[in-house]
Image (cartoon, rainbow, N blue to C red; front, side):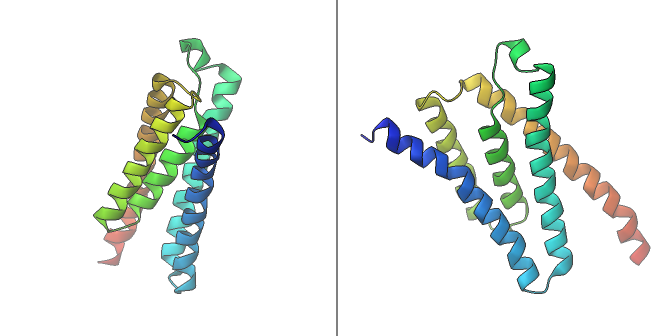
Length: 151
C-alpha cells in the first residue's frame, strides 16, 4: 500500500492536471482557428473558477459550511467544476465517463486521506453542480434569441 505522503502527492496533482487539461482544451480551439468555440470554452472555464472561488469567499465571509458543522471543500469545487467543464465540451461519452470516474476516485482519496468528510464533499459538490447547471441554463437562454435571429 502507498504511504500517506505518496497518496498526498497524487491528490495534490489531480487539480493541477485538470487545470492543464482545461487550458489545453481551450487553447486547442484557438489553435485550430475556432475563435468562437475557444471563447465559449474560456467563458465556461471562467464560470467554473468564479463559482468555486466565489463560494469559497462567501463561505469564509459568512461561515456557510461552518454553520452546519461542515467544511467547504475548494478541492471538490474546483475538481468537479473542471470535470463538468471538460465533459460539457466533449462529444465523447468515454471521456466524460473517465472524467467522472477520476473524480469519484479523487473523492475517495480525499476521504481516505481525511482531507474532508463525506458531507463536506457531498454538500460542496451538490451546490457547485447546481450553480453550474444554472449557469448553463442562463447561457443557453442568452444564446436562444441570437439563434432565432439568424433564421
